[in-house]
Every structure is written in structure tokens, then in C-alpha cells.
Length: 381
Image 1: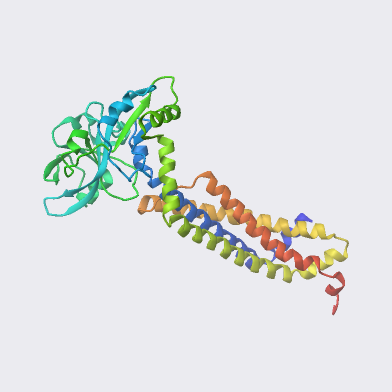
Image 2: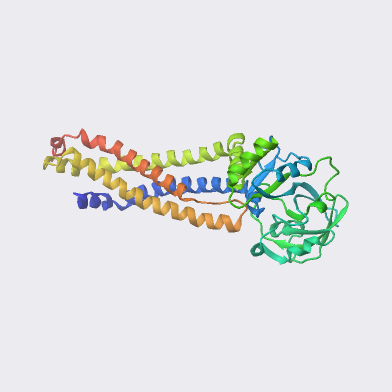
């Protein structure tokens, strides 16, 4: 019966291809939009991941995500260092400033101030395009990310030694590095902590975060809990802070709803196309199903045949749709500013959705076959 079901499915090439394309379009839309959504959520945590070397982030208790900076007192650094299990802790500045070019053009930038002594959080060697980290110790020295360089000097080749102003202080580019794209798509500038205080307007409190690492043998999460109980500050591991940031965007912005609507539309459109085509396909093959029923085929056998057809269509449509999404994702990731990330969960969820589309469509079609009287097929013959 399986062979008969497949022959019936492929007998009308036009409708066969139409069903597959309908399911493939649904798979493409669902997987592509879900992957762009995942990519956008990862953009919100780019700087947490780029600032490496420390697994503990300490901040003001009211901080809701990485860009919600609330400066804390320098005295808090020494309190954190005194907590049992803290191997070391250093200051970190993170904020926004404006770069003023010689042409008079202004550009908003993300400024990162690294601990002067250790430079914890500096770009990793494999991310450095030009320059050396040690050059950050020079006066007015900064590192700038590659995309940010293109924003400040569009169309010009990468070069060290270029200068611009921030807060009426000269900044000299001594290094260029590759950074993950940020949610704000601004240039990312790294410098020493003491230097960063000159590049921003004068403030009473400057320190944004405290970066730390547990002592050998201590668990990061346990040390974070100890810091919270003893200092009253919020302390999270790098992974926890990433999730805190993503959950803020999930709860407080309309991004999930917008992408959810698109994914839902993909499911509905795929269901409508596949359901209608499957239904018409079944109607056209009622005579064949009636003949099989007259020959003794049970309802269970006929339902199995229809479900088999649906599974074959879903499998082929899923492969085509997800394959097209991966191809478009490669183009999006390299040629545009959109983010694209397809984890296995997206592929699995898309597979479940596509199979649901096909099975629901087959159920609608199967109902017509189940109530079919075999004798009606031979009337008028």
C-alpha cells in the first residue's frame, strides 16, 4: 500500500510540486524569521562576550541589562575584593561618548575603559587586525573595532595613527580589532580606564562594572551569591548576565511579538496552501480510494496512506525550506547588517511545525475518505 500511496502522490506532478512548495515556503519563513530573531537576541549580549578574561560581573542592583549602566562608587571595588572566594577584581567603564572628526562630523560611540594595570577585557590576540595591546598604555591611545573604523572613515583603508576628538581630548588609533556586531551598531572603542575618564563629561561616579574571577576551587555562581549578600551589589556570572540582558529585551520590547507574528503567519500560510492542495488532491483521488475500499482496504489503511503522503511531503518541503533559509542566512550574515543564527532548537521547532502543517492537512483530507461509500465510486460507470 505504501507504494500505491506514493504513486498516487506523484501521479499529478503539478499538485505534487505545489504541495511541496507550500510546505517549503512555510519552513523557510518560520526558520528564517526565528533565526533572525535569535541573531538579534545574541547581538544584545555581544559586548558581554567580547569583554573576556573575567567570569564575574558586579553592578548596581538596579541594572537591568548590559547597556543600562548605573555607575557605582570606587569604594565598592575594595569591598568586592574583600569577599571570600574572589581571586581578583578590577574596574570597568562602559558608556557612550561622541567622536568629533576633523571634518566636523560627530559619531556616537561605545567607550570601554579597561583596568590600567591588567587591561582585563581587552580584545583577544586572534581578534586584533592591526596593532598591539601593549600600545594602549601610550597617551591618548585607543583601539577601535573594524566596522566602527569604516563608520568614521568610510571607504578608506585601515591605518593606524589616525586621530579624532572625544570630549575635547585627542584620541589616537593604535589598534584595530574585530568585534561582534552590537545591538546599537555603533563604533566600539577600547582604552585604559584612566583615559576613558578624560573622554567623557566629568561625573561624580565613573565605574560602571566590576569584573572579577573566583579563586581556584571556588564556583563562580557561589561567589556571586556571596558578593550579593555581603555588599548588596548585583553579581552575576557571564552566562547569567547574558540571559539577564536577553530576557530584558524579550520582556520589555516588541521584538518577540513582531517576529512571533511573522512566524505565525508562516504557519498559517503554509497550512492554508498545503491544506487546500491536499484536499483537492484527495478529492481528485476519491475514485482510487473508493476502489481500494471496495477491495477490502480498511479505514486505518487508507489513513496510513494519506499520512504517509503527508510525511513524505513534509520531509521534502522541510529540507528545501530550511536549506533555503540557511542559504539566505549566509547572505544576510555577510552582506547586510541583519543578524542570523540558527541553533538546533530552531531547526527542531521548524520540523515540528512543518510536520504539524502536513498532518493537519492530511486529517482534513482523510475525513472525506473515511465517510466515502465505495458503491458511490462505481455509480455512472
